[in-house]
Length: 115
Length: 463
Image 1 (tube, each protein chain N blue to C red):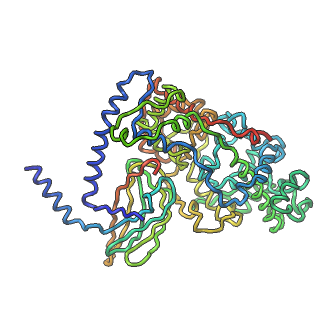
Image 2: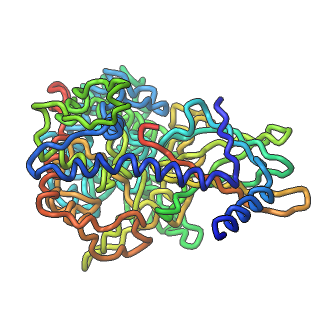
């Protein structure tokens, strides 16, 4: 019974969450370890106004301020990202929609040694 | 370009379940390894060998685009002559090699550097320094040529002056000829003490802080007669003298790019692992490490380093360091001066006229200057210092930014207990006391000693 309630809850959450409102296009080979890199982001129905990253378990962020360049049609180029350690990162994307509402999309990212 | 499409709602559950699977898969191996008797060499899983290969070998030197002389052999020879020359100091007794002594691991075996006077921090080794993204414990230089100016002109280190450097090169025929061949003539008027006085230098760059702008030009001029003489010089002569110290720095960088150690026992151990066959990977069977290179203790230390010790979190990659900045939570000893660490390094490198975006850089393309372009001023960097490379670490005692630990064992005791609290900022949250046994400390120490590479080529080790 409990299991069914949990399943129902998960299905409800999944249906209520907008799908793939944000796509990340990393360079070939994926995000590099401890090197500055540039990547692209595609966003539906909102502007990308900020990009940041952090390691929640370490209580620290990145040592750079990435720059955002609009490429048009919901495509954005992000430069100056530097993930300086291996481990569990979160990437933060701050969006603002046409009505001026802001919200943050958080994407987990596991960075491996030798990456 | 590879698309990384992540579906928001499903991702956390997927990540969690895949992590659980990985843990389950790894568990039997860990149990097998820990059941082995103390004293024996450990076995190595496929995943561990992959981690080892991320640490070795040392790759080729990164390019130094802001210095077009970086890989010139002639510049390196000129830099070598300067590196060992004590005439480049206020008292004629302090050379670069005084603190960066080839016989002391290119450091000085002292807790705090001693030039003209005692300096506030431990001397980092020149070995492999050319691999670093930032120079100094606080990273206040973004190139080795900009780094060289600091000890040269710092009153406590070599205490030399910019005009004094011009005058010394001008009156020393061999150095003048070498300079001319590389960089062209010394500044016009360099023999005239009225234009280039014996001791004139600008103030060192000050960490800029909007709430504490520091001394103004008048105050700085009044603080040191050498500054007063500097500002009395003609602007064109000042710029010409600065160009000379930049050229000298670039020659010193060219020289220090030759201070590269060869493979260490650790590198030979990693290189000797056979390529893993698909069958071995599929079988997930741990295997013995290559025989006859690292003893059992060093192997156990290495296994702990990349495994439960999580040392590899910060000491990763072929340098065994990410070259960035972390706060270990070292308490401030009684009587020691407060040191802000990286946060001042950031504030200083941004305003240094000799940084990579200044007119003296040979890479004027702003787009390619990623280090400074995206550098963040971040309060998290209070009390943080650069993670040093562990290569050759056994040769460079004592340790930490203030040389507080005399031996590798003392450093490991610190990580075992993590005593005290930092005077500023906060200790990196992933640092937890390792609670090491004496045997584990001995193992880790044995591993760290296996990181000593073969010496720098003899031709570069002497004046």
